[in-house]
Structure formats: structure tokens, C-alpha cells
Image (cartoon, rainbow, N blue to C red):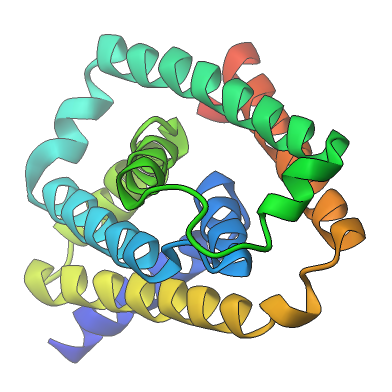
Amino acid sequence: MWQSYSNGLLIAAGLIIALGAQNAFVLAQSLRREHHLPVAMLCILCDAILVSVGVFGLAAILAQSPVLLAVARWGGAAFLLWYGAQALLRACRPQALEQTSTNSSRSLRTVMLSALAVTLLNPHVYLDTVLLIGSLGAQQSMPAAYVLGAASASAIWFLALSIGAASLAPWLARPATWRIIDLCVALMMFSISWQLITGEGLK
């Protein structure tokens, strides 16, 4: 049991901690202190569900379905382009920077829908979480323990990122800092979207 649990914990940690669209979104929400804990919990829940369905069968289905992967690819690329453009606009408009320092400037529903889109419209989530983590988990002696380990890695990471970034918000609330953060987020979103459009993100 513990071997399967530790395998899930380490494999998931290695993939989840890598900087990507989901982590960038959680980081930005945490620095704004804008519904950051619900966002972190949503990401944890999504990861647990995706790993579970991957371990218990969906990995094999997606691997044999080019149509589903194509839908995820182009839908994800379009959303990441839009989200990157929004971040770029925030970096260019001083009034947008001022709004990020206020708490809960957007509704919980709006933020949670954005978090779902960042999570579920990103093909890397399915390639990494469902296909890679899921297929490896299906080979474990105790798949349920493996899923629990992967879910634990997600919970530790997102809670640490959310709480840690929120605690640093007073020191990171300067307009110049937010300009840099939004520019980095925009570049990351554009980069991932370009990889998906060119096919590099699916290799």
C-alpha cells in the first residue's frame, strides 16, 4: 500500500509542481487574495477526479481517441490565447493594476468558472494527469492507494501555493510587481497556446 501511495505522491508532485497555466492562475488569485482558497480546493478536486478516472480506465480511452484530443487541443489553445490577452491588457493599464489590490473584485462564480476553464481546457492536464499519471497508476499493485498519493501531492502543493502567495501579497501588491507578474502570465499562456497550435504540446 505505502509503495503505491508513495509512487503516486512522487509522480504527481513532479508533474503538478511544474509551472503551467493552472499554477499561474492559482498564483495570481492568491496574490490578489481573490477567492484563492476555493480556487485551490477546486484544483485539488479536479486533479483527484482526473487521476481517478485515468487510473480506472479513461487513460486507455483517450489514448485511442484522436477526436477528443483534438477538441481539447484547439479549445485549450483558444482559451489560453484569450486569457493571455487579458493578462497583457492588465499589465498595460494602470487602473487594472489598482483593481488587483482589492479583495474579491470579481464574484466567486466568475473566478471558479475561470479556474475550471484553465484546468479543463488545457490539454496538458489530460496528457499529464489522465494519460501519464493514470496509466502509471493502473499498473500499481494498489491503484486506490496510488490515487490517494497523487491527490495528496495535489493538496499539499495547491494549499501551500495558495496560502504562501496570499501571505506575501502585502509585499507584492505594488503596480510594478503586478505588471511583471501579468506579463509573465501572458507570455506563459501564449507560449503554451503556440505549442498546442503547432502540435509541440501534444508530442
